[in-house]
Image 1 (cartoon, rainbow over the protein chains, first blue to last red):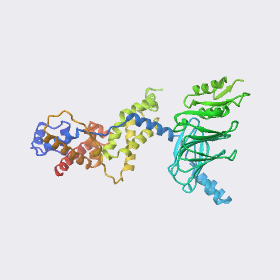
Image 2: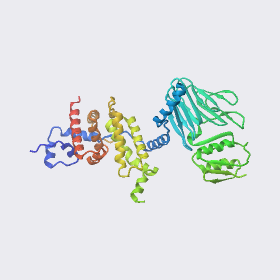
Image 3: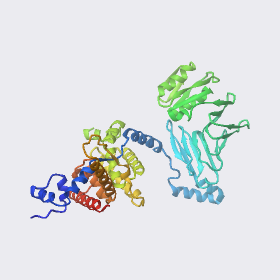
Image 4: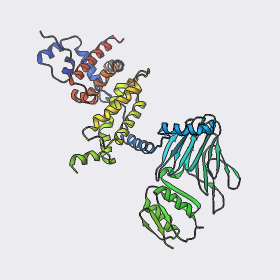
Length: 303
Length: 177
């Protein structure tokens, strides 16, 4: 009688045993256990898997990490630069070398984490710089543009901008600061806003905001959304000089507005989508009765 | 532009990439799951592998995409999960398909249940490679050839692993109290 080989169980599952081999196997004392193992395994299945959700996660992850700028890619060159600065002062060199910068491109958003786990979502064409080295003791960063912060509990967290500073303990808030434009919204916790332009201080609690734009009076905002609208691809404005709405359009769609003379004291209250250029332009310009023509990336306003 | 070039580029498009994702994601995920049993880590690895593939969509053809994908995922899980001391617990998460219609006696059902518990224990105590091959064949219904292609080994190697897996399961179950 032939002895069964060292893969006969595999062959048995594939119905590849000869009649002799099969009979020999069936008469063995273990045959029934093997049959039960196979029957039992047939009743098992893997936990369910949500394909649609996973795919949208993948898309999201891909969009948020693809435009990440890692600073000082070329460490060697930085080293040379730094050693020159070393002559000027050790402290300056130290700070310079450890500065980390994140910036987002036209129409893109960028999500990243700070060293303490606080999360930042950067709106289009915005930049954040901070010092990685002493982040543990000094949570201060510089912002130019717009960003949403979800801050981990810890010592004071400060956002410095050209228009003023925003400092908090653990909380969620949005800062939009460009030249002549300063807007802060609090979504969770408590936020302190210091406005450089008039030296005023403001304490914000959830669903309250502060806005100071050159050309209109500072106003307190009251809103109901749980996160900034731009995260859902919508730019929202309240009593905002039209010039700043143009700037937002320029950032979002990489445009250039050109105009000679028009009434730039017009205030705009409303919103535009961040993912449809035509509709965005129409919504803003029709509502303020302005006619325009497009030439490549230029939007030319008619007098 | 030739046809094959057209196809190569097509994986970069969201629609065709999603179609590729839909045909391969569950298999990749279960493949890793059977081997390592760590659902959350594995979901991350699956996502990262697809992102890498997408980023490199111009470098692969529709023919090579699958093996490229599996290679990324396997490399990543080997380096990330190999040294974990947490032993796999996947038997707890494996769901039973309920057999609602049954003519069996209560004693038999009880016995069957006890057997299934033993079986799940035995499966989770299998060496990684054996468990992976065994479950891909039995649950995913993959042929030995298909399994061999997934991990770039010979069909013979898969047959040996499969045989060893069954043998070990039987010994393990007979030794369990």
